[in-house]
Amino acid sequence: MASASGEDEKKFQLSNNRFVTVSQFRHKTRIDIREYYVTDDGVRKPGKKGISLSLQEWKKLKEQMDEIEKAIVKCDSDSD
Image 1 (cartoon, one colour):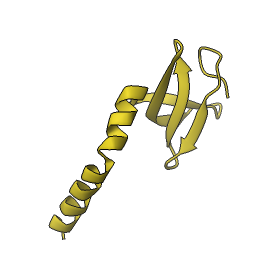
Image 2 (cartoon, helix red, strand yellow):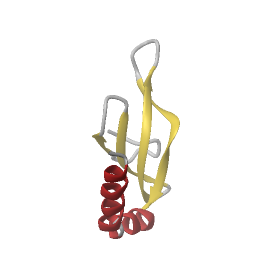
Image 3 (tube, helix red, strand yellow):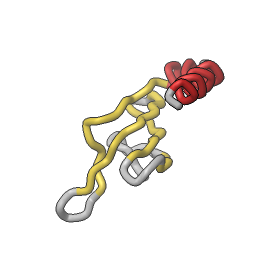
């Protein structure tokens, strides 16, 4: 699938209306986590709800994934 800049993009579905998209924007890799909506004529389009990460931000997020997972487990166990 081509992005707005005409370059390839790859989409990964998280849920019915949420996707992770890896694409190029102004010759830089971007990772978007975004909510999509379907228009009246059935076309799926990106909505305003979401975040766009630079490659550097994505790498930083991945570096912290173990600590994030621990925080999720703790938060989830505290809610029981």
